[in-house]
Amino acid sequence: MRKPEGLVMTWRRLGGDVGPGESRVEIDLRLIPEGTELPLTHSALLSEETRLSHEHRWSGALGKLLRHRQTIAQERTS
Image 1 (cartoon, rainbow, N blue to C red):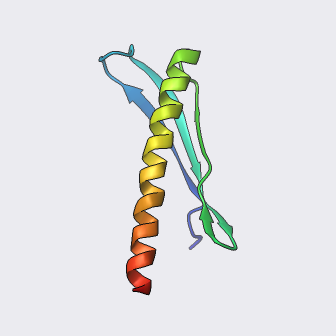
Image 2: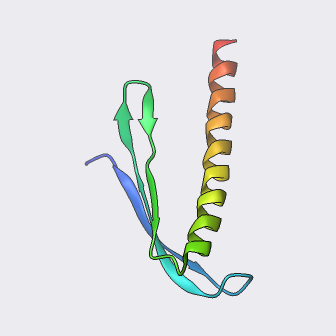
């Protein structure tokens, strides 16, 4: 069995402040000497405003993931 190299999913928002519509999220997993790189592409967004909003939110979410990983690494070395 092959190890997964990434994830592709349809992102669909129903209602709210941004109109409904589908977009595509692709997350790759790439081994690098320091660990794993996680490139993320969110495409087929409705507008530049929507893209900027998603960019801000993905940056925040991935920043939290990085900080969590760093906390775990520090706890393991303590």
